[in-house]
Length: 281
Image (cartoon, rainbow, N blue to C red):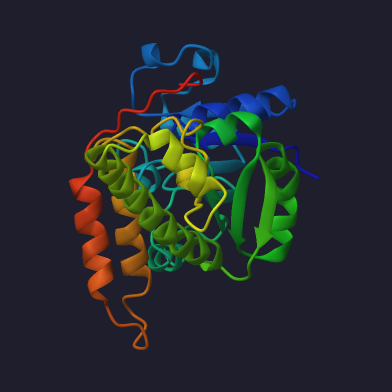
């Protein structure tokens, strides 16, 4: 079997701990990001600023850039364009949360020698550091088989969901529910404060009652749980994920847009920063 040389494109809150996990496991790993090299401390020696060199060295590239625009820039732009040159990666793994409709379109645009897998991931940066991410996988069985030893270093729940796009379809539907719980938890914590109820007491009761949800239950471990809405932060990414859900379902005639869809987007855009006292944050 070919020795896998892994490239991670996008070295932010999720990409950097993924790199660290792979390095610790003994993989050869290179990283690429458009930000200046000076911003990367521990992984700086593994950074390749030249996208063509990054593509040449890495036979497996995992993209964790922010969105569709950044994905297209990574793959096709003149500045980066890692699949445009003579040495595109053998396997391209999209782990960013994007529309499944975009994934299916992307399959038609890649060079014939590059296999595509959507490996959407779930879990905050703390789970990336622990190697306990969940991966939702869509793609050819043989290619997914080849990726399993790599993904098992970074995640402990790997779901094989069928053809290209099924991993991302699962992820955006999951994230729609997550976005709903984020908005609802922010809302009731604001209500608790206005009513004079200790918000920590409410969270403790919710954790063991019907109000339990991932965001509320792990609010101390989630690095961004106190953020309000901004285009540039994680709540802005949550908004992007809801839009990806709506794009994914937009071509299905059996799915009509609900008022809840627009209400959820409006609620996310209204979120204010939380002030939560905790010994762990």
